[in-house]
Amino acid sequence: MSLQPAFKVLARRAPIRHDAVMQQHSAGERRIRRRGIAVGEYRLLLDDRFLSEIIEGAAPRRVPGTCTWCRGVMNLRGNLVGVYHLDAYLEDRPPARAPSWTLVMHTEPAWTAFGIPTLPQQPAILSEQHGVRVPALPERIAAHVRGAFRVDDQRWLDVDWSSLCSALGREAA
Image (cartoon, helix red, strand yellow):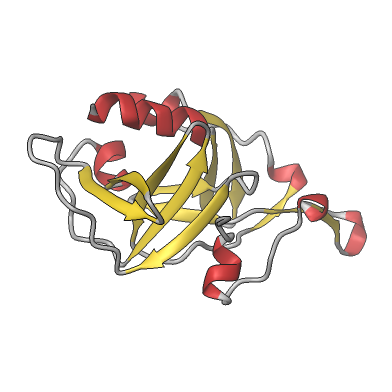
């Protein structure tokens, strides 16, 4: 059984083909089509190369003795998946509340899931907006940020999800 991308599972989002990541717009401007999630004060861009799925109302099982930002584990079609409070991890604080949605990503070599408060957004990123100065970030995320984009008054961070998920797994163990 293969995992369906989030946009097919929810049937609420249009698919983003890998060959259509860049598209032309009026006056020769180029837009980068990426989805992103708001996590606390951060805006994180998702990497469409990874399989992902969004589940509403997932209830992971808490694992005794784990850190406060570890929500627990869930069974996803026979795969045991660690579920994390990403906002609590990044901001080094206890989680505010249980999120409404769970974003499940397959970053080699394993599955990782994050509670997210809202569905992913699709910011209108102009290719010329890349290279925006990355703000001072906490150590937990700074090592996993490849760059930043500015859209309106928001700074969207281009995250290395494989690296971030590996760090989460190591720290939670």
